[in-house]
Image (cartoon, rainbow, N blue to C red; front, side):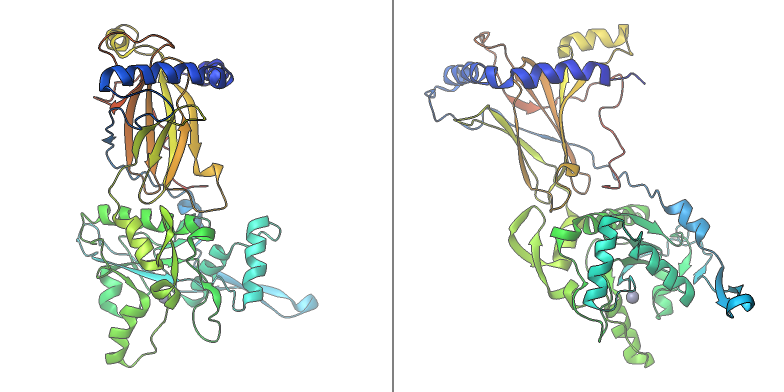
Length: 441
Ligand SMILES: [Zn+2]
């Protein structure tokens, strides 16, 4: 791999230090060209868009589970019980049922449903929940409500396949091919994947605002990771788990149907807050929707971010990136050589780095609140060819190219600054994007 960081620094300095001084010059060149090409008057009001189209990127769900191996190792078949006091105090291991039975469900094509649960997190009062949320946030008590839920399920001898923590981590308790004891109905044990969500207790008398919490302002990472996990399962089952609420069910729905006939006590998770609470919509917080609908929008979203040019009267020109479910990452790449040069060069010097990262925005820049659906970044003043790589919260990508011409120049027939399809992704000597964006941490 070629180290790109050495090349990055001077360009960053050049672009950002020079940006304010050169922005006006670059802008007037652009406006002049617009005027010539499209017959519009230059002035304070310029056409917002010159020539815009964005090529959608192939959806890639790169989703890794850093916790999987560790947690499977710690999924012990024994728990320790402490008995006695003082000198008589001793620890005895107790064998427990892990709630997992080996199967071959992927090859047998048995998986058709997902069942969503709320995990306890062992918080049964608002005060306790607040205390544990605080510990989670500060790391003070090293309390991990996700791990507490796993421990609890283990002692009960039951398991789900996955648990999605409120900070977006995903832990796996059982392989998808295996059966996990997460619902009473044996038919659903056979055909479903169980997913716990770290949303808290939702059964009376422990049912309170803050339990069963799906607020995307505070727990957007949980919803996004859950959506990506569901999309991954959809792929892993060749679409047998269809992306609708008939196949992505709640534990309450599965139990209601089964327990009415079998006479058992139905579970209520993930609770009425999931079904009925109105929450801000991903991508457009001004619109309210139900938590379930919000999740399904993430689950079914296929639209890549759209990048357009905007002219700003009092600032440098910008490129605006918009996505219906929210943005996770925008990278502005500068081509170190022209496209023509690269086409010639790539046979000659295949390892030469041809792109330089000029600017990057990720959700890490706004860690607390729900990521925006619209983000505007400055068009760099430095002349050259650029590519905007944009990715939404569930992994849809697009690539948009534009050119910034040298100030005051505009060759006849050329557009000084325009956005267009990336005609064909160049065979860059190294991958453009960093795949390590999976965990949102
Ligand atoms: Zn449940």
